[in-house]
Image (cartoon, rainbow, N blue to C red; front, side, top):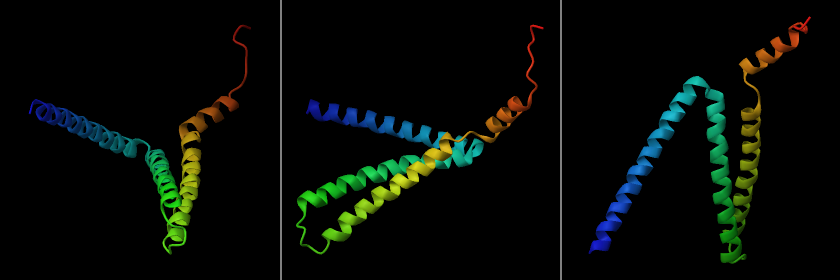
Length: 123
């Protein structure tokens, strides 16, 4: 009986921690959408593409090794998983490009630094 109580306590702590993390994620997304909407959406798509590709890879492996290849549902399920993986790679690459691209403020600062006259202050 003591084991069930401890299990309930551990699960309760895990649920509270998961709720707290979910709350922090929601707050971070809200702040990110207000301050940098495009970069925040790119970050969300970046994470979702990774998740989708991982789940599709698992599904493709399960279908390949655990399903009879002569069944009519093998081809759409397997090649659909491969299509999701390829699409996820493309989405992730585009999101990575957006995330690595300098912001408008950084581009302005680089332009100002390039246009500033170069002089030696020791003279």
